[in-house]
Length: 159
Image (cartoon, rainbow, N blue to C red; front, side):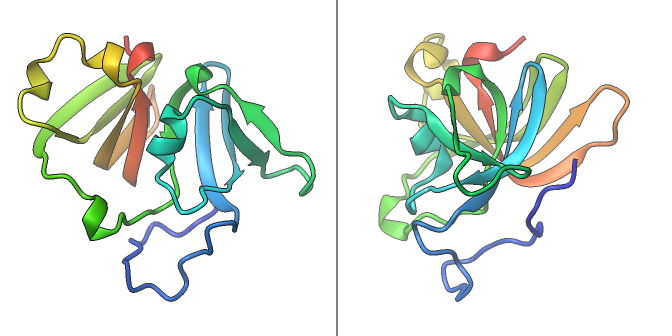
């Protein structure tokens, strides 16, 4: 499925960066659907929105501006978020680990940014539901892999 945004990276000095209330493109993969559409991030990272306690408000590509749908993050398998660059003051030093995860017929290869010791933590899934992988490759049976800047996987849905 073709995403509604170019694959080029967004930088902090990008004058075309959307305003916080502007809908941004997103792809949501659920058990029975692969959806493209729009979300309003309010300038936040999508991973932070997924970890918040409420539903993710999503506007499907084929819907009108009034047809926003509430998506329960627990139902998501994989999320391909819009490009985002965090402000330097919000960045935390992490160790990088190449990983491959399988989520119900999908394989995601990418770099996980984990705090020291977190890679050996057997309770990682109980503390964190979503894990962003950068420089990611997303593939499914019989299809060529798709390259994405970031792919977020639901750790509670891993095979």
